[in-house]
Length: 437
Image 1 (tube, helix red, strand yellow):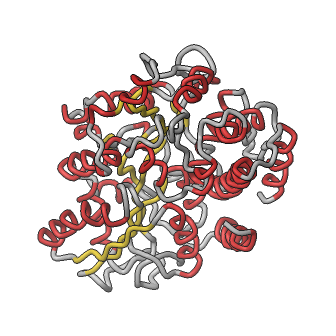
Image 2 (tube, one colour):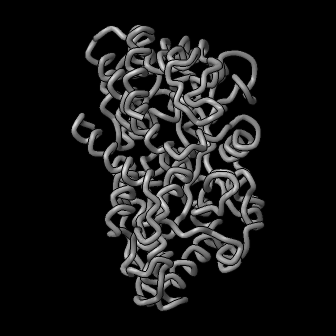
């Protein structure tokens, strides 16, 4: 993202978060609390969960057709790439030109809640979609700031895992997946040979960069915010964590310099094709299979830690990941929007869609289905329950993602170009990022 684009983002975010805009949002009605002026249509922005935008359309279109058959409501679908989704949503909250219903990264919940543009899920609104108690408690924890009605409901639950190519591991004489980062680097160096790299990363992806920065900082005892929600990007441990991640390209050289430009699942393609031997990804199995990989071709393990075993504190190995659904407050089809949320979070759709994407249902009864007890999903489920922690629940969280994700993108670009990345240069970059908050 260019400096101009980042500046524009900051302007949009500042206006959006600081102003409570009860009449702004998506849909086609100007009613501040939504209405039913367009009862037969809905617009839906879905996030890119599959191998491509077309893959998502292929998965979602039959479900939207089933919803139309049940209700008579036609849903116009747009799958939005992650590189555009947050900026599109923020622009919609200020312009009023957006969808009726949308997917959001669960880490953005508190930030988007602060705009006042989204429909609060009060007890009455939860009742219209089947009740609040249907949802997993861990998933509900990332639907908005504590003490306020959520402005989103959980759709897919996710965490990071380490995926590794069994054939390449065998050829390199590696008998088991790495449990610590030192082991991963050692294995990665053995695997970086003959046109292969040890690790694939998505170095130009703002969300991916931020998620890894957050976890690596945690593992070094660092936090990006203090207890009052103030940014602490230069606190002890933060730069050390960020540098460790950037060093996969800069110092360890187990990831390709070209990975610094990846932002559209190119790292998934490289892993699935055998170009890279390992990848850190959220529920990656279905994506790998869509690229021709067979389930027996790859193994799944917890994301490594510095030492010991995954857990809490400095042994956190994932952020609590997931996708939520939100309704714009001024929708022109409030009743239809809530019916659509109810449909997408029904047991039948939760089982179907989470099976398609390899994620874990956010609804308790659906998550108990034996179909979600595969080795991969057991790793994800255990991580969510025992060693993942939520991203900062602060109103400026989405701005934090943008500035930190961009800082890592720039650092990885430096590494790819052969420019030195030192602890001091990382601290300097983080200090500049904090100034943008």
